[in-house]
Amino acid sequence: MGLTFYAYPVALLFTPLFLIGFAALFRGELLKAGGWAAAAAVLIAALWLPGALGSFKATKMDIYFRTQSITGQAAQEKIRAHLQAKDSSAARAISGSRAARTAYAFATNYAGYLSPAFLLTKGDTHSETHGPRGYGVMHLASFALLLAGVIFMAVERRREHLLLAWWLLAFPAGASLMTWGEQHAIRAIPALPALQLIAAYALLYSRPAPGNPHAARAAIYKLALVLTILFVNTAGFFHFYFTEYRTESAASFHRASEQAFAFMKEHKGDYASCATGWNPYAYAFILFHDPPPAERIARDPRTGALDSARTLRAMGYTLCPDRACLESLPLPALVMAPAGAFAPGAYRDLQGRTLYVSETQTFKTPGTRGGVTLYRIGGAANRSPGGQPRPDSW
Figure 1 (cartoon, rainbow, N blue to C red):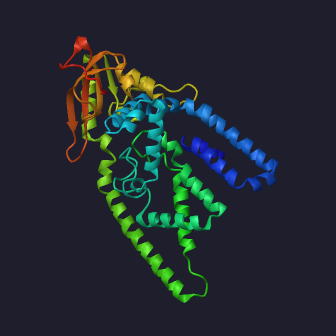
Figure 2 (figure 1 turned 180 degrees about the vertical axis):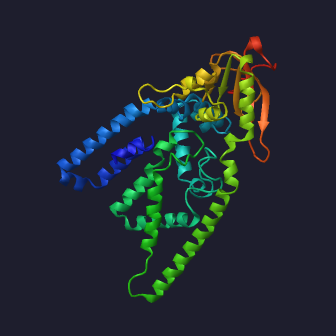
Figure 3 (figure 1 turned 45 degrees about the horizontal axis):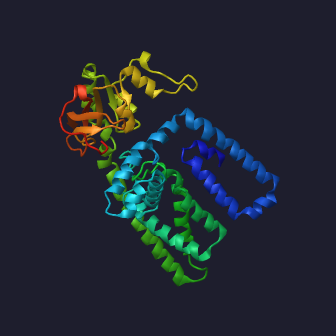
C-alpha cells in the first residue's frame, strides 16, 4: 500500500482514507496483531512522508495544485461567476464566501465522479487524450452489474462489503479537489479495482445453488446476455477508438497548432512576451513544434529531469496556466489559447489596471471541431480595441 503514494498524486489522499476505513472495520484483528500492525503503520507513514512532502514539491506538483485546484484563483472566479448567474439567494450567498465556494465545488465534483455520466455515458470531460467521448469508464453490462452488486452488498452487509463501499466513496476525494466542473479519468484511477470487484460480486451472488438444473440454465442465459452486451459495447468502443478517436486525441498536434507556433516564432520580436495558456502540459507542444537547440534545454540539477519552465524561458516562451500569470506578462503579449477562449475587449485585471484583448490570428484544421487563436494583450499604452473596461473576468 505504501508504494501507491508514488503511482499518482491522488493516492496521497486516497490511500490514507482507504486505510482509515480498513482500520475502523478490522480494528479487532489489528489489535490482536499488536506489534506487527504498529510496524506496518510506521512503515506506511514513512513511505507517505517523502511522497507528500518531498516528491510532491520536487516535481512541482504543489504549483500545479495551486493553479489547477478548486482553491486556485481561476477556479474561484469561475465558480463565483457561475453561482452569481443563478437566480437563487442561496447561490448568491455561497458565491460571497471562499470557503463556501470551495465546498460547493468539491461537492459538485464529487457527485460528478459517482454519476452515470462519468461511469457510463461520457467519461472523462477534461481532455480528449484521456479517452473517447461518449464512453464512460465502465461498459454497459459492467455498470448494470455494479448497481446490482451495490444492492447485494447492502443486503448482506458483511465487513468486506463495507470496505468495498468505503473504497467507492473514498476514490473521488483527491480528484474532486482539482479542476472544477470536469471529471478526469486518470485522477479517478483508484476507483477501477473497486468498480470491477463489485460488478464481479454481483455475478457471484446470483450464481445458482448446486443441484438445481432450472436455476443453472437461467444462470447460463443471464451470463450469455451479459457477454452479448459486453461484446456489442466493446466492439463499438474499439471501432470508434481506432477510427475517429485517432484524430480527436491528437487535436493539439494538428495543422492548426503547427501553424500557430510557426506564426508565434516568426513574430516573437514584435512582442515583449509570448505565452501559451490552454494546457499545463503545453510545453510538450512547444518542444514538438519548435524544438530548441541542445544548449537551451535546462535540467533539474538534482534529478536530471527536464526543467520545462527554464527551458521555455530560454526559448522566449512563458507557460501561463491561470489569469494571474497572464496579467503579469510584459506587454504587449502574444498568447496562444483555444479559439474563443477570450472575448476581445477591455478588461480590468486583478490589480485594477485596464488590459485590452484582441484576436491576432486564428488557425483551424479542416475536419476538426476546435482551433487555435493567438491573442494580443496590451495595456493603455499599446491598446488595440476600444471600449470601457469590463468588470468581469476575462
